[in-house]
Image (cartoon, rainbow, N blue to C red; front, side):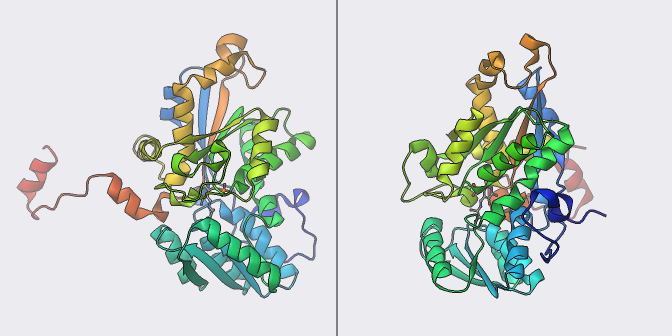
Length: 366
Ligand code: F0G
């Protein structure tokens, strides 16, 4: 029986026999071969989607939260706290409920998706909507957790990063090697930090021989790392990554530099197009922030980035080297059902018809 990432990857994680494992069997998410995107990319490329929406609370946050809450419990903590654009709070609330620990969350008022808010509330967290953005909420959480006996469970908590690195292990285990490129959204920058750590540890352990290029994408209205300065009033429809001053900024830059990758931005239009393409062509419903990875992939294809990599020693672009296709993994960080409002706004609403056979047959073209 599969029992979650701590059980599976114990030897790579800072846990002992004394650590009480708080798990909802997170991880083991599907790596889906993306047929449509692979054909769009053309010969020599295979695109895969790591669908983190199939974690127990619907996002990748569960990988880090099983570690953070297990360690909080081990240390005897009575309360945990986070600031969140939604997914962290949903995950913290669920794992804290499972552990019997109090959970307090600060969210930017009016700026988180409905599904995420419902999760934090139903799991019994104390939810405060702050009249300010994520960055302001995180600042307050840092101050409060430094002064009071409350454990911070944002990705500044190193156990979060430790748990999240398990996704890199899973990708390598599925492919039997490192991918050549990994494309992912970047918000507070904890996840890119975690993946890079995971890949480096797997290489250190001799399980993979190469490392992927890390290609991170921010939303254009919330792109501090791309611009090289904090953004005071971050904007984007991808509320999960509406962050103007990422906590793991330096680590994200290190992942970019060390991997020979890049951090770029995509517009809301590009995000929405990718969001709809994923749903309509691949059958995968991911939330808008997640679609930033596929938007990034398409942007890089348009700029001929991948074909320009052909001469480099990364991957095996076959036209020049005769090797296997280059493998590109796009991380889909959260489930589309988190934000049903956005889905409905992005398509035509159903037409209301009379309950009449003739009318319906006419409508469906028979
Ligand atoms: N995708 C989704 C769906 C997210 O919820 C987040 C972050 C990211 C991408 C970016 O990951 O912050 O590690 O760079 N959500 C956080 C939250 C900030 O509070 O739920 P990151």
